[in-house]
Image (cartoon, rainbow, N blue to C red; front, side):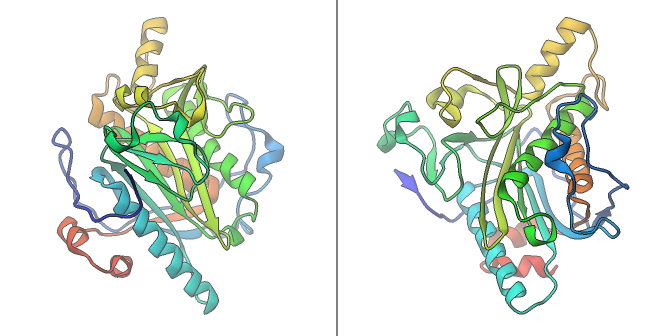
Length: 312
């Protein structure tokens, strides 16, 4: 069965201790868009980010990166925030950007035009929930160990170009892999996402309504790749799926060393390091000042009006 939007509860992975959410701000350094250290970026594609880089824009961040959030609730939440932003724009009121960071319970998602031929199972007897969404792209898997970013931003304040925005999200991941892990990543012509060799490490699927974006990117960090065997990921049959953890293991075997904030990080530390790098690179690329919003888990679980969380 293919689901649309469902109710949810949030659970915290047992292996990772819960952390306290607090209001804090991340301010981007002065940043000029150009090629990455490994020369993988196309400078012409990233001549500018925001309309004005003199003052960074504001971005509220709901940071649930250590929490497992059921897909249906996260999807519904995004759509409510998009609706709120449209109302603010119509009223000509201030409309800050929003970033949601989380992990999901195991789930398969399909894009608006995805083909069920890429499912290696009977849709009526699926191993995990399946959602057909309005994002672009083919089928993919989300699950624990995968850090998901849902930027809900007003492209009027950046660049009104969806192709640029898609490439920008890829660029954020490429910079994370390069600067934090010394992993050389690239794009694959004709496909969205980020690749290391023939392994896809990040899937990207986006949607925009009146230039307000939602959906986003999923980066495999310590993900169990077994569920990917039940699908043809992104409809690409001759390529593999990889994780940062796996790539670091390969790098260590070939060079004897690994670059990371922790020499030999465990799974939770690797998630922490990746999460911090994603926020940094996202903030600097889009020239956004990140304001972390306080979230109390019980309140989030019981909330019937998601917009009330945005006022905390």
